[in-house]
Length: 93
Image (cartoon, rainbow, N blue to C red):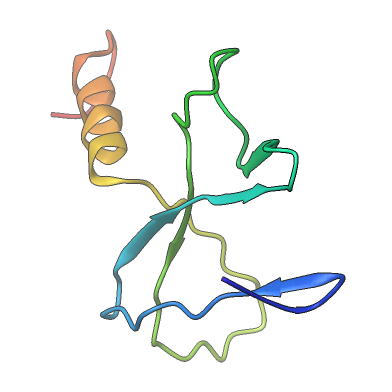
């Protein structure tokens, strides 16, 4: 990560295939050794247990309504599918 000015930072990300889900977090430290991450730690011990995600999408959308997508890791998707298949009264499965 490079620091082009005193108020901003920049990074170059490697190219990804279409529909790839990328999981990441940002970490910064100062001269005093203090470290911060985004998203922040998930516990008082500083564990980086939750990261941000984005999905590469090379398609072109020409509709007039916004599109919202839920981006999950494969593990999260599997857990959601399992929950849907084991809930009482579920129509799944």
